Amino acid sequence: MKKDKEIINRFSKLSKSQKIEKITNYFDDKKEIKNQLQSFWHKDLNIQKLFDDFSENTISNFFLPYSVAPNLLINQQIYHIPMVIEESSVVAAAGNSAKFWSTRGGFHTRIISTTKEGQVHFIWKGDGDKLRQHMPAIKKRLIKNSEFITANMQKRGGGIMDIELIDFTNQIDDYYQLKATFETVDSMGANFINSCLEEFANELGFYIEANTDFSESEKGVHIIMSILSNYTPNCAVECYVECDISEFETIDNRLTAEEFVWKFEKAVQIAKVDVYRATTHNKGIFNGIDAVALATGNDFRAIEACGHAYACRNGKYESLTDIKIENGKFRYSLVIPMAMGTIGGLTSLHPLAKRSLELLDNPNAEKLMEIAAAAGLANNFGAIRTLITKGIQWGHMKMHLSNILNSFDATEDEKRQVLEHFKTEKVSFNSASTVIKELRN
Ligand code: MEV
Figure 1: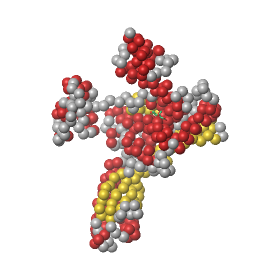
Figure 2: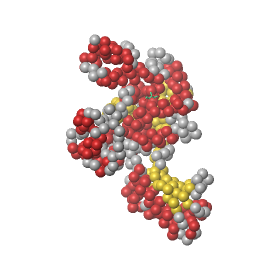
Figure 3: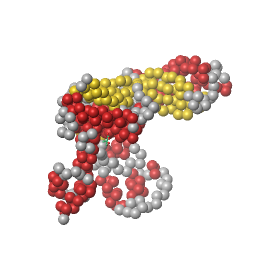
Figure 4: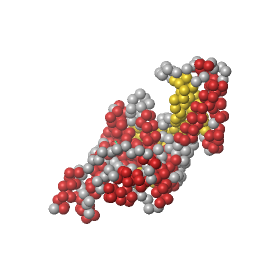
């Protein structure tokens, strides 16, 4: 029954059991939901405490499948890719593509660049040319006075690469940015970048305050905010697959190799020109990338946001992949920016994220970007291959069949009989429920 919700004051200050008490009050089956929440707690209390501490107001854990897409050949090395995802066909699609490409040279990857940006956004009423003239001195001071933050990162080969002044006064009165470029090596770098930026903001104010070149009316710098940008077009990776067109001769018994390649090319061209298709096309890429990001404790929201912004870099949203058919060769590629980390954050705290990285031979951030890009391209290739041949519902519904069976609480024997039936039949929710009902009758 729907129960009206009241404001819960100081919820975060309540103990875990008090929080559970408050929330389960909204349910009719209070005792049952309480047991259910507790049944998902980890039996090792130390591990549960770790999970509780990842977030605020934690009352239980939310399970997702942890799967492995085997045999992805990347730069001539085999990887078994850990993937965390709920969508039933994603891991199967990655696995199928991995198998297909494993005998055709595999996935080729290369890092294009690895720097990231952050900005101090500020309002300043003054002579822009004068500020520009002072930038070399300001930059020097900002870098020098942030050394207490950057020392360790510098030892690891990273740090602040540049700081520039961006004049936005033609769009918002008196609005400028300090736009800084960072190398964060194997960490995603959010904390490092944000700490540096907040320091820059303070130092900028001090510099202008103390410098006699600036008049009294120019002294006040209004810092609006200091924050990294999740748009990281200069932290990007390329991944491609390539083979002779004749390699597609046996990919599907409905199409010749030439027909397959022709349809594939059209599918990619459509995703270049139509935003509705491009969004779904790119979603298929992120099926693979997000699953690897989650399995390795990376921030998949940052990676998604960046990828979609990058897909608009030419003025309209389009496919992130490109195709080239030339001289009897098929080349299919993905260029994608992503801020991945293999140290810091959840990567070493989450016990399974740590294990995922171990399974991938403890890659550095660059290698993990390459692996995730290959998983993304594998998933997208698998999706297009299915779409232009047997259609998506064929495989999707087959994979979904076990969810449907579980929703009917099917016994093992019922499952076996239903699976047998659908070996040759098209699956739909209705057809599956009819077969179960017939069996039960
Ligand atoms: C489903 O999760 C992903 C696809 O829709 C991607 C695509 O259409 O390219 C199959």
